[in-house]
Image 1 (spheres, helix red, strand yellow):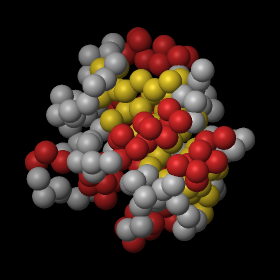
Image 2 (cartoon, helix red, strand yellow; image 1 turned 90 degrees about the horizontal axis):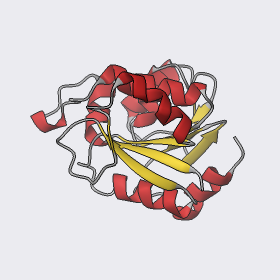
Image 3 (cartoon, one colour; image 1 turned 180 degrees about the vertical axis):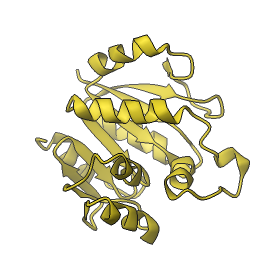
Image 4 (spheres, helix red, strand yellow; image 1 turned 180 degrees about the horizontal axis):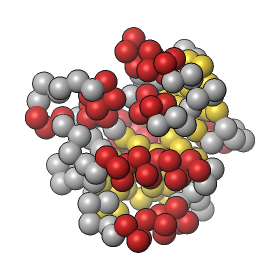
Length: 184
């Protein structure tokens, strides 16, 4: 059974994390949850705050897919806006987050980016020249376009090994699973 690592950055968008996890399980993945801060109230198996750097390569070997539930924290981080509430500060190791996303992509592992996360992935340069979708906010769409991403106004878009999702909470299971099963 393939394994997915689901990095939960924020749970403020209530249904993002459980919906994403449920879709991955229904897609045949064994899902482990990772956290990078103590303000995320989820059960987890991987603690990225305390994981030594020399153990990171084991994650890239062990998991076939990497998914991010970024919530409002990633949204404000990507837009470089000050969040209205302190609890929405991105209080994780940003360098480690970038390292994880870049390395999983470099190894051609499946990368699942819902909501505002596609804009973050675009800022890392990983979506340049590819098709992608993003949560329908003008500023996020502009980030995609500014980073040479072909914005597609669909719920789910797969481009090679990267699946972008407009809004995981309104995406049908059927749409998501079709993209998950599509050859990348």
